[in-house]
Image (tube, rainbow, N blue to C red):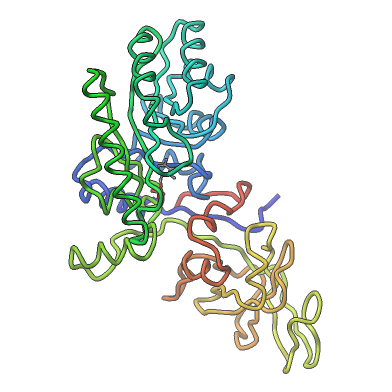
Length: 381
Ligand SMILES: *Cc1c(COP(=O)(O)O)cnc(C)c1O
């Protein structure tokens, strides 16, 4: 059965992004963050493509994602779980040398006990609370934590010490981010003075990595930038100004395509699709495309979305249906069934970018990308 749309991933663009990241961050170790199904790009398609660009460290949110990476990654690549995993997952992670964050005493105890049972060390990253208030050990628990780490060197490898910034992409959070830096440095000092240090220290996501070079330490965790996007307009503008460049060096690697499934002529004076949101004032030609909100084409794009057909921009008319949309191709006499329709991407010098798609549908790049359904085929080009 043929899927009604396909997501294409451009290896050349990805290669270029990784070359930029390596030179911009001066060869610093980078963990490729591939949570959220690799920001919608598809873990199983994306991870081997990233490995071909020399990436060998992957960060995910939960054990399910780690499992997907594990299935396709080279055995020499490192996998790190930054968020949720239950006790069974901890056993699996230890068995497979998968590194994971520890941010509660309960998880620490489970890691110690499971490692003892398996007779294999757990590779852990200790996350410190610095003001994000999501996960992380409170500063006040650090002395107790240090005692546990010192007493359990037979079951634990202290791989990393880390934190996460709460909104480094916006100058509005300047004070909060500054406080986080101070707080992390204070925590780090306690570890240093106790004579117990991790193998690596890591604190920065993309925005922090661009904005806070003094916080890079041993590794940075890059998500959105590897896919060709900036964390937000402020970060891009800051980069362009600081380095005196005209346009973003990052390239989008994803495009989303479908084809015309049916063409329909509509007489003047008729409503189109469900309800009465679009009325034909003239004889119209519609191209019906088999992609709808069930496939991630948001209902909020009803009567506002734009797609590309035959190198030209064409508007969505009427409501986005569950499985299809109607496109106004009235002035495009050359369209035919099976013609390519670009939902996100470039054609004939025009572009529907994720950002413009996002603006039309009121979604953030991050949200829009990760909502692209898992079951659409991802194809490397
Ligand atoms: C998502 C995430 C990142 C990557 O964020 P980007 O803004 O996409 O670079 C890094 N670290 C943690 C803990 C995250 O949750």
